[in-house]
Every structure is written in C-alpha cells, then in structure tokens.
Length: 203
Image (cartoon, rainbow, N blue to C red):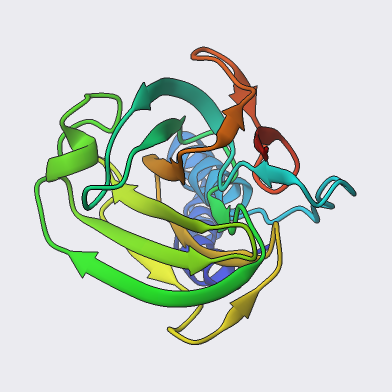
C-alpha cells in the first residue's frame, strides 16, 4: 500500500462511521465504499521482473493502446503506449536498469488518456534512463481524471529493472520510447503488468 492511500481514505471512512452512528445508513455505505476503493486504488503489490536481463518490462499496469514508429530528437525508434484505468495498479516502474539522466516535467492539457494527442499535449513527466544497451525514455501522462503525477526518484539515481519510480493518481497513461534495434513483443489490446510483463527485448 502506498502511504498516501491511508491519508486519502481516512476522511471518507471517518465520515462513514459518523453517518452510521447517526443511522444514515445509505450515506454511511457510500462513504465507506469510497474509502475502501481509495485503499484499493493505492495498492502496491510486490513485483519480480523476469530473470532475463535482455528484456524490457512494462512501466505500468494496463492495456497496450499503441505500438508505433516514432523518432525522438531525431533518433529513430518506437513508442508503446499503455492506458491505465482506475482499476489498475497505479505505481509506475522503470522498464530497464540504468541511471536517470533527466527528469522533465511539462505542463499541459488533460485530454482523456486514451486519446492519441494526450501523448504530446497532456501534462506529463518524462524520465530518461541510460542503460548499458541504450537510452530509454518513458513518460507519466496525466488524463482528465488523473491530475497528480508523483515522482519518487531524482536525476542521478540508479534504478533497477522493475523498480518503483512514482505513480499517477486516478486513471492515466504511460508511454515508453525505445531506440532502434529493439524487438517489440507486445501488440495493441494486450494487458500488461508493471515490472513483470515483457514489452520488448534488446537485440
């Protein structure tokens, strides 16, 4: 459980208990259900990445929306987009082991995370990680529900494959850009789990 979950869940649960004491049963039920859902949303299960160090794992739980050819700063590569619903685990993880060389926050709009232009125009936080095999960039992207991006790492930190790096609250999207020479093994529509599902392999 992410610690913030207790903070956000306490209010609704306390209101639910008070409402129950006053015999406002349906109101109590609504508040207690809301508090339990918040605790469910902030869950943080343990994940063990694949033993094969040539693999690149998903940075988030969710459904693969796109796998497209896309250049980044003039470098050819591919982008994979993962959509997170409010029912997915929202803790984000590093897809590769390496050193964080850049974290860039950018303000933006709050289009629905499933829309294509959300990748370029929504509020987002981009991590650049230099691994032994190449540079990987992945973005936490806010949606119309998720408007709070949380980062737990800093520039200069070393990360392991599958290590927690932050979270996005209440529905969102994550993009991962991979350089040329990486073999993508997922397809649009596929469900993935952060830190364990294999998105690609280094050739």
